[in-house]
Length: 102
Image 1 (tube, rainbow, N blue to C red):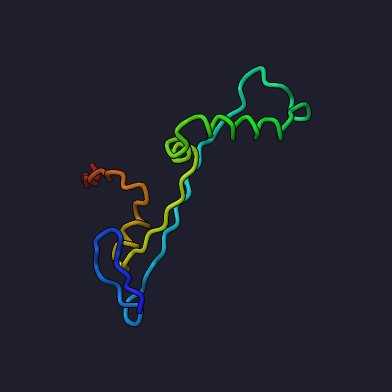
Image 2: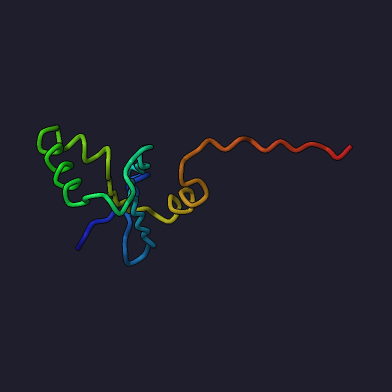
């Protein structure tokens, strides 16, 4: 039997009794074209790919790959899923102050 646990709170998730949610996150660098770059039709895409691969071989490819693209997968219990959906970026939510209607 496969053992599941919530990656956020570490609660053991029993698939026969508990709902398990899978969150998949994919992050990639958004690179804008540089000013003065040649028009799209004049670009040699194969040459560019070859140059990028060559640079990756020359540099620390593990560091470069995480900076450019990352894919993660998390299992969440029901409670952590609902908290995640209310605040997916874990931003601090300001306290709501109730003021009287004057």
